[in-house]
Image (cartoon, rainbow, N blue to C red; front, side, top):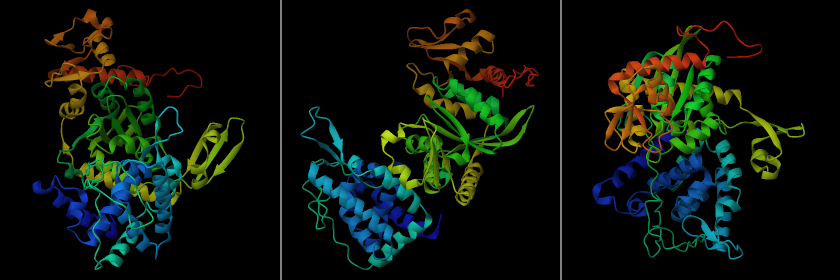
Length: 509
């Protein structure tokens, strides 16, 4: 982390620690901030703005209440910064436009308003009126770099020592009243100061989340990934073939595996650092709050050996919040996007013109490809390797059974009748385990775990209710047998794991 970012983060951490004290937990953000210096206030306001925009765009900053709570101070700080950095002026222009639409629409705390001319009476959002997407693209390109923190540090140095006027509260005590700046926000009297409060400091080292990260060393990666597909959810088994083929056909060393009940996404790790990719969007939307989606777990997959007899390597559990922060902070924006239209015509766009492209034009695009600067990707690769290495160093090496039990926890707890001492298995996998006699399979019924007879394998997925199936923890060997057989089948290998000699003409693995 750059020295300037360290300086800002240290100030934010001081405020956050004070806010976490028991006697302060019911206070609003500005009740706490008024007790700190101008430097602390700048760090929190601009730090929150940066984190919100980088993780969910300007719309997220508005919707989460920061526009209502922080706009006056944000303008004050950006005006100071605009004296020596033009980027501050660009951000200010967008905030002033927000003010105009906020006054015209009489929006509420979260930027929502009712249009009297809308017969349906639907609620609208002021962020839709200012092209937040184009601003986000500009911000990622020009402010999502280490030198932006140098600007924030400069604003702190410029403002430090000058008394910072307290923020005037509305009657509910939670945010901006009529502002002395041109900005004037009309709000509903909603008292929920913590929505627009501090952005939680994201853990930047693996151990800060308070949970021990686990890792597996020198394992059969294909079989282990199949087991993760089986123990993380019912809705992701169809992705197993694509994930394994990507792994065997690829040449990358480091991969990310994001596992949940509905999705198991495997991709080269560098894809997470490319803005606009599916992996980057998946992490930003899903992994940014482990409290919102506790069923998702992130893993690093590091390949050591890739050959005809299989792939071996390590799997390391990752801190999901730290992953989101790291990929967001060091992401690389494309410098060119090449589009192919339905009629066959092609056209290249720079980042700004691509963001401004209207929806009707996008509907005519058949395919597109983003091109990223080599220098940016090289730097992102270094950041990625450093992050993966830190998690690996902090991880505790365990056996596969312990590793899978932790991965299975959310899937099991979501069952109608959970049995924490068992391993819940996706129905498709359980059906084959039962049919092939790999292990006993149990139905999680209200009266407890009910053992199924092998003949019931054919109808295991047809129960009207209580369809969740599980195996006992002592039957991990049976799950191993199924995973190896399933991986070999998907990769067209025989029971010994050897590649089949016969392939259809033109068919690839």
